[in-house]
Figure 1 (tube, rainbow, N blue to C red):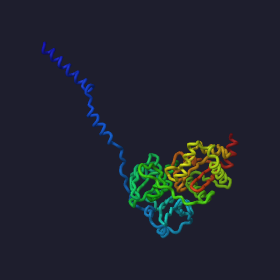
Figure 2 (cartoon, one colour):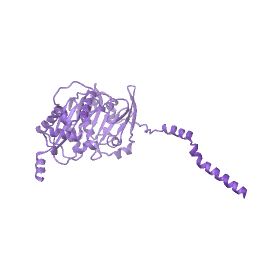
Figure 3 (spheres, rainbow, N blue to C red):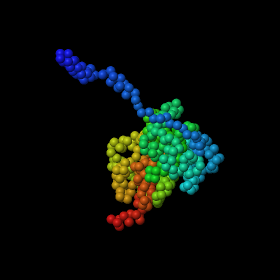
Figure 4 (cartoon, one colour):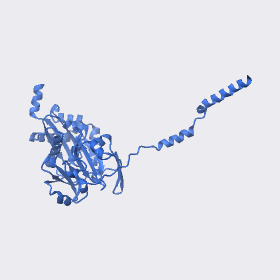
Length: 373
């Protein structure tokens, strides 16, 4: 009996000691080792792969004369004011194409046309079609002029503005329309232009500032018309009615532009005014200033335009108007402003590197609205 009681006593002592040991003697060393291990764990995106160069991608970095030899002379040439010359091909919307020429070399090709030169892509395809052909990557790390760059795409970027790399060290941005989810245009570009436009997050490295060539003051009718054509082209691809252009809508857009310049205090908070000033000083894609919807509504009020029958946007600096418009149509916030089924007028005021777009209901639509009220 004594042995049994002794055994029970020893058993309980061992049992209690086992339960209390972690309390009085915590495994600090083990925990510290675990902490050190967890600190080294980080999310690493897969290295991106380059696809074979084909079609328009092969012309990036080549002489503009090489393109002329194969496709003929452009129907129009325009000075951009931001360091490149714009070449336009295609009188018909189905054949539309733009080139950015820098020092006689091809820096960018913006293809809206569904020619064999955009293969393996095709205008009108969906992202799922692209995913069957290749992997869509979220991170791109590369060097340019001995500097390291690391680009990260957010989820919406990957869904509507994925980046594709070619084995000739050039890239393409695929712009998908946010309304239809279909490919609107393929923009082929070199590293320098990608780092200038930089529509994505830049984790390492700095964006390249826009070239600032002295431009004339006042409004640029050529650029304004170019913006309108691009917007209407994308509206057609979406099956929406195109905008009407008239003298009054253009004057209203210019009036709003001047109103914003002269009445900042009535439209912007002091903090937002400072942000705009910083944007003017930086002239980079990392410091683009865009009016919020509320600020634009204040602008309409100060400019004495009916807020119920108008909307639009203002942004600066703009390096490439066409790519800016493509970005609007691939963005859920801005696309909704262009997605109306009703007939509307459009006015665009473009001055230096700033653009204001005004969308207004047509007189017929206005009268119908007033009658229904």
